[in-house]
Amino acid sequence: MKKKQNLTRVLPVDRRIITVRGQPVMVDADLASLYGVTTKALNQAVKRNSSRFPTRFMFQLDPDEKLEVVTNCDHLSGLRFSHVLPFVFTEKGVLMLANVLKSPRAIDVSIAVIEAFVRLRASLLAAPDLVEKIARIEEKLAGFQDQLDAFQGIVLPLLTVHQANSRKIGFDPGKA
Image: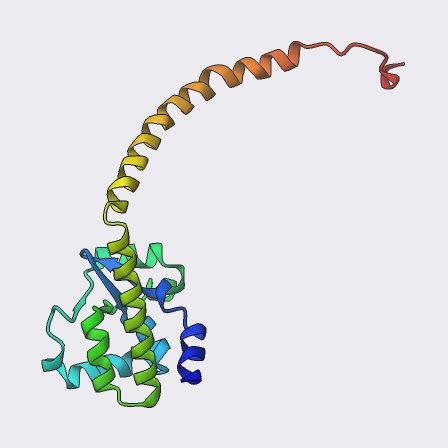
């Protein structure tokens, strides 16, 4: 039991779950690093067992999705120049990977990943209107940006003119 707790602490699983096409998923390169195999080996295992991975378990990113993922996920910057489009796995796909990759590490990693998906789902259920609230805040901030730009265009130039015209009162030893 202690081994699984250490593995969960060592693996930054929660931060590797991203949203693509409205679904929480993990990129094949992240899963491969967690499982301790190459991405090529992971994808070969999936291809050998393709009947276990329908599109609701995994899908391949299109070029625009790949660019967005690479742009938003610093740890995936190595994928930027890859000519291969990455696969992403849903929670069910990750669970199926444990059946395909039968090492003890694969089982432990799958447990950690499934627990991360469950935590994500629980946090989303705890605040169902959070996404809507964030969107409203972003809209308000966009409106304030216009006001801030106007302030900077009108008031800040006045402050710099005032500072240039102001005289110091008192003795300046540097001018004596």
